[in-house]
Length: 303
Ligand code: NAP
Image (cartoon, helix red, strand yellow):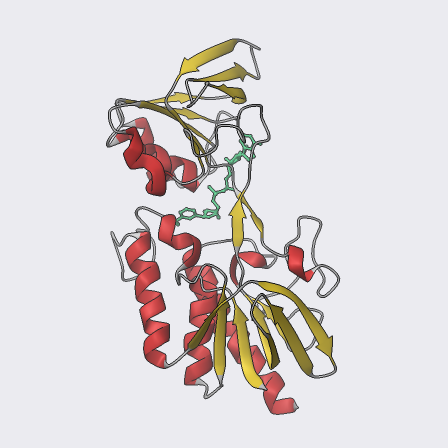
């Protein structure tokens, strides 16, 4: 039986791995994609991780992964399909094998929300994208639209504006949710046009995106924007479907856990974006990894 199994290799999972090994625990991280780093890999500029000004998400995620490997954390590339709790033993069912552990730390993070508008699914990968840093280069010298008003939408608009002739930033309110520093950059970028109070209605195109239809929620005015790409950045939802009935979750599927990362099941912890918390950032995810291992060590010592 393993001491510690961590599900997910984003900043929370990798931090838990590093702290786990340093606490002398036999530690395994299970990651479905086989790539360490998580969501941060798709962030262009991180810029708010202490000590790392200007670092790209790819570099920071890769460094965290390399750090965990250097500490001796073991990795398994597999999908976790469920967890069974039998007394003090946690059985983790994966696409490859079943693993027993004293402690499980859930760090599966979150994935992109979809809008659910006509044309979105049909044109996904043909101009509709959820990752500007992954797909932005295909739209050099073209016109794109970004939907959303959080940090990701602002960052995506800034990133795309470097290569696109024009970027529409479409937000459903008249005030952005994202950081003021990013809002200032967006407002001072000549080829970004902000459409406030605007909601997308449909994406159209035969083989690829050709237009985005929108309407203003205050005036009801409709517009058809001729665009080659639509980048959707309307937040994320937690990856917890495989844990239904195992741990307590809120109505959105976030696992109920406080700063000690303890769930309602002894020996099962939730760290990072996957748990109920006020601020989902790389630095708070990394902090959760450390807290979860501290709680887990106390639990193991009490067995
Ligand atoms: P977010 O902060 O939840 O923002 C989502 C945005 O999408 C909001 O502006 C929201 O509008 C809008 N939205 C949601 N549903 C919509 C719909 N159906 N139609 C139109 N618009 C919709 O999500 P995020 O930008 O993905 O960021 C997620 C987390 O990661 C945040 O905590 C963020 O701070 C963090 N993050 C941090 C960094 C960094 O520190 N470098 C970088 C990226 C992300 P409303 O504002 O009206 O709700």
